[in-house]
Amino acid sequence: MIRRATAADVAAIVAVFEASFATLDFLPILHTHEEHLAYFGRVVVEAEAFVVDDGGVAGFAVLDSDVLRHLYVTPAVFGQGVGSALLAEAKRRRPSGFTFWVFQANERARGFYEERGCSAVRFTDGSGNEEQAPDVLYEWRPG
Image (cartoon, rainbow, N blue to C red; front, side, top):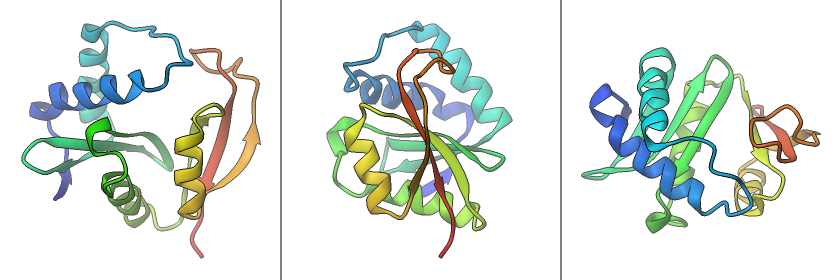
């Protein structure tokens, strides 16, 4: 079931984020667990956050205007349709399209998005992101 995230979901969202982010071993860890709790606590209130609830939070996504800010799935369920469901929900909520960033080295995510109709529109050297890692601006547009 996909539902809107609430403040009660923040700890579970952070658990998914930290586990998923840890699989990106090419990136530095820049923030503490407490900083993640505070950040996602704000995000749930200020943006449109939603979760896949299968008795616990299996994944989450955040839309902020026409930007998909986050889409993370707990590694235990990679490849089981959670990410696809979240992306489909983002498309449903933003039928005219949206953009999002992916690290260039995150080949798994890039393949996932490209297989589902998203296109790379700009490559950067990473100087504009906190991790200083090369990234790609993607977009999804209908039909």
